[in-house]
Length: 117
Ligand SMILES: [Zn+2]
Image (cartoon, rainbow, N blue to C red; front, side):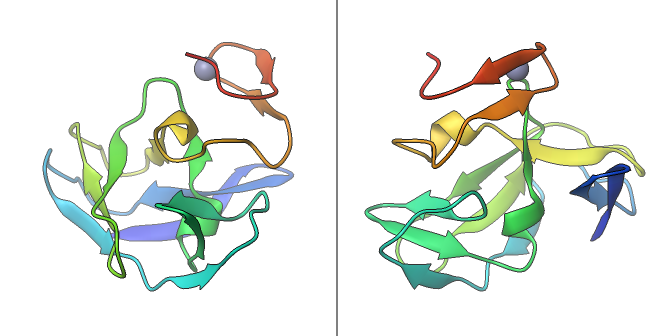
């Protein structure tokens, strides 16, 4: 359903390789938890998850997926129709209390240094 592909010449992302309907379970993460955050981890509760696909999920302020479920089996669900070839994104603000490092937000061309509600 998803693959890791080049989004730009220096950025990888997660791309839909078939059309995905809203509310589809895209991935059950296969998490390795640590107490430390970095730019590849996703915060689940008080822990930081590393996952083969999760680390390549890029941010969007208008995302097409979201991470649900805490504990040991967080999952990625589609929240919109995702057309084949489209990048799968989620809103980092929904998981991270603090960002490990600033990142450039493509959707509104802004450097995001922390929470941005
Ligand atoms: Zn944005």
